[in-house]
Length: 146
Image (tube, rainbow, N blue to C red):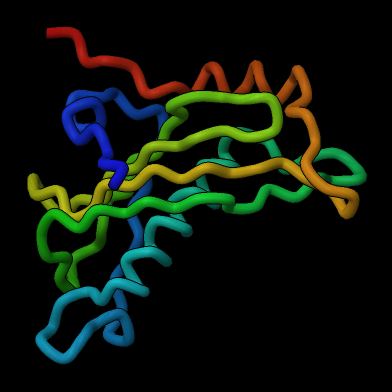
């Protein structure tokens, strides 16, 4: 089983952070944000990251789809507090890129995630264009200097 390098994410400097509100409908029977809602919170963070990076421009606009999703649950996320989602690039390939994410409330990390996204059109995967590559490279998760 593949595991996320939590230390790399914990010590990383993320280029993008956003606050995602928790909703009553996100809760399970014991009052925690449920697993489906947790994945949706991460998805919302990725969508805001991609928009902020300026990747979804041009015509025709290629699709960015999730090819792989690995989420590790570390601690409870609770309502009504918002969740801070930090997102950044881990690596870039020919047709895909891998993002790292952390979701936290206060000082507690609730989720670690690595998501592979593929660029494609109706015919299948597309090579990542040079302008996307440049934008993505500028959004890497950097190591915190100590």
